[in-house]
Image (cartoon, rainbow, N blue to C red):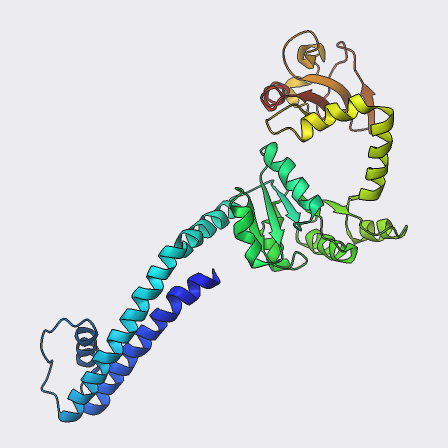
Length: 333
């Protein structure tokens, strides 16, 4: 956008200034009114050659010569700038940015990812694979095009500032991921996000090993704090103790093609009172329900029986392809 401003706005500003000088010069030298001065300036700069509006004095002719030479220089500068923008793709990128911002403005219930760190990019890749709408907030303006080329929505700015989060649509967002390298920065992002949207769910990374840092991040507004070092230790143990299970989960999360996913699905009014067996899919094609969560007790029932009657608001943990999960979600609604 800065290249667009320098490539278009500056030449246009120079043209407007030249027109103002022309109008002022004819008014001062020849004593013409505003309309006559403007008309003479335009036909002179446009090299139309209609003829003089009124007879010019010698001083007026000298001024007109200078105005023509200045107009040739400014018009050459304008055409050169526009050609340079076209060759560099600046106009195309500018229109892409405007289209992307319009898409962000129309988003509702999306996710905001703060930081192009390794955890942040991993979150973006998973959201992209599962077709979740999201906006990535990066610090440098130069990074925007790189992630736009991947088909992501991106805004540049300080993620802890109200302006950057508002540009990412935080007020209508469903959740925000704080994935900046510094824990203090993540804490500021959480505070700002909570102030702009009290209902937003906040998940943040804890980079330091300070035992008190988790409590500080929670007090800052985070709902969930993830410690990558702790997760990494559990992963190492799982690789040793249950390698087949780890490889199965990796095939879901890291596969190049769309694979199966675990998903949370909520039972709606249409599913209330109906047995789970109508949706379970263990003996038929479809998503498999592996757990049932009672929102009142906050407990999970693993491999629930088909006879269990569903209640509105029950959360089902299902396993299946994106198409199977969409079909199950529609049936539960």
